[in-house]
Length: 360
Ligand SMILES: Cc1ncc(COP(=O)(O)O)c(C=O)c1O
Image (cartoon, rainbow, N blue to C red; front, side, top):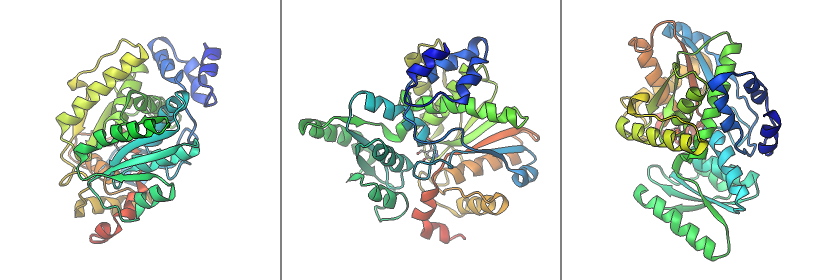
C-alpha cells in the first residue's frame, strides 16, 4: 500500500502524513483515497498551528489558530491547498492556461495566478463586483503576476464569460482549464479533507482534541473538505462551524451537501451528507460580502492587539467575530478546545486600507 501511494503521488513527496496514515486503523484508512490523488506542491505542509493564550483566557476556551495564512505561495491562504490538487489535474491534461473568476479582492484569483506562474502556465481572471480594480492589495498582486484581467459588470455573467473565453483560446490552439469560483470543485474539496488530518495530528501533539473547528465559509470547498476528511478519519464528532462571509446559510449548506456528496462519489467511498450535517452561521456578514463595518475593524484590532495576528476584513475578521460571539454566549461551551483556521486574505487589509482606516 505504501509503495502504491508513493508512486501515485509523484508530484509531491510522500510526507509525514502518509507515514502516520499507515498507522491508522479500520475506516480511518479511507483517507488514503485522498492521498492517492496527485498534488502539485505549492507550499510546505503542515502549516503552523499555535495556541492563542491571551484570547483563550479572555474567551474561556482553549483557542488554537491554524495558520493557513502562513505559506510560501504568494502570501498563502486556503486556496493553496485546493490548487495543489487542481493544478496537478490541469497539468496531467496538458493544459497551458488557467481561467478562473472572483471579486476584485479575490484571494482565489491571486493564488490561481501565482500557482499558474509557478507551473509555467498563463492565466486569465474574470473579475466581478464587488470591489474596485484600483491597483492595490490583491489587484496589485494579480497585475504583478501578469494575470489577464477580464472585468464583467455582473457576477451572474462570470461563468459564461469563462466558457466563452475558453472557447476562444481553444480556437487559437491553446489548452485552457477552467477553475470554478473559489476553487469549489471535487478536487478543491480534497485540499481540506487532507487538512483535517493535519489539524487532528497537530492537535494531538499539542495534547488536545478539538471540539470545534471554526472558519470563514463561502463557496464551500473548505467546509465540505473538512467535513469529509473528518468523516473519513472517523472523527465526525469534531464540529465544523462555518461563518458565512455573505451568502445566506441555506445557500451555503446546499453547496456543502453537493460538494461533499460529489467528492465522496469521485473517491468511491460510501458516504452521503445531508443538510443536518452542516452548521453555517450567516448572522456575522455585517451587511454582506465585502461590506466593512466598525464591528469588523474592531475585531481586526482586538486580535492584532491581543495575539499579534492580522485578520482581513472580508473573510477572517467576520469568522473570528462569529467565534468570539458564539463563545461569549455559550454556544461554544467554556473550556472547549477550538481550532480557528486563519484562511488567509492578508492582502485585502491593504486593498481596503481606506475603509479600515475609518474605524482605526
Ligand atoms: C481568506 C478566505 N477565507 C475563506 C474563504 C472561503 O472559503 P471557501 O470558498 O472554501 O468556502 C475564502 C474564499 O474566497 C477566502 O479567500
